[in-house]
Length: 201
Image 1 (tube, rainbow, N blue to C red):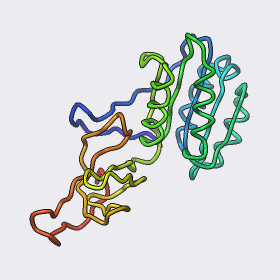
Image 2 (cartoon, rainbow, N blue to C red; image 1 turned 60 degrees about the vertical axis):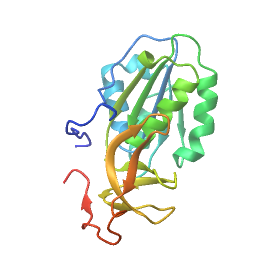
Image 3 (cartoon, rainbow, N blue to C red; image 1 turned 30 degrees about the vertical axis):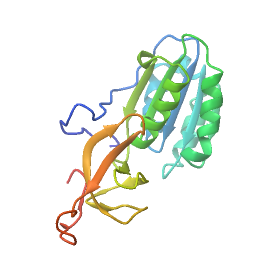
Image 4 (spheres, rainbow, N blue to C red; image 1 turned 135 degrees about the vertical axis):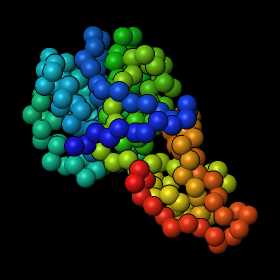
């Protein structure tokens, strides 16, 4: 199963729901990896919605879902190799939306957070954006010391990919950066770093 129930946390940590069909003038669906399963569930519940949808999909490790998405009959299906390679298309589609558009985001926290930022910057109201987490629980982390972003962090602590500091994985989340915050774990006692453990284990 690609769904994961995140344990209770602090207020800044995002909370995800379940995508549901809504009336709208346009329907933009953005997903990565197992997020395609959420779009397929939506298509099964409301096939007429998928026929009007512009879908942007980043397969990650779930390439087999591409054909299932195509078979669901979206109006437009664009498949991109990565979020950075796809973000210009996302921005262009968001620029062309009209009042009443609905946005559906599904997949990893990194994809959801970044795409939500783009939608909000394009003027899409928060109430018109739905999110559903599916797949990997890896985090997009920002080092609070060097400000570098490390994608797909799966262990706590982890080593910053930019400055090499040992960072504690915090639940504090920056919506502006679409990233969780990592802080040096051995600042007072250099070298005293606990063994990394997998997130949520």
